[in-house]
Length: 77
Image 1 (tube, one colour):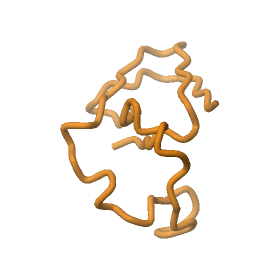
Image 2: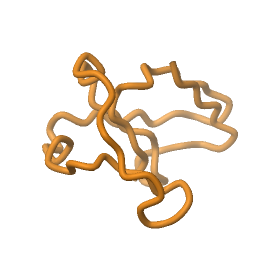
Image 3: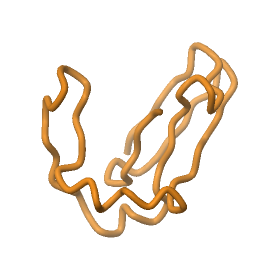
Image 4: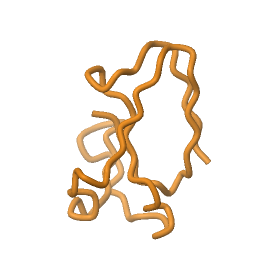
């Protein structure tokens, strides 16, 4: 489980969280840790998450929390 607490508003224009619902059922995906610096980890095979139609954007107001399965591919934009 992963939990995020939003201290500031997180609209899509400000880089809200996005995820690929249901993709957690595929299990953990191999990552390239540290690619691009600290906090810039990415899924090793970018083709697995390239289809934008599978991403759900989750804009949230300040003070919100979000909870998702840690194996769900997720990122902010």
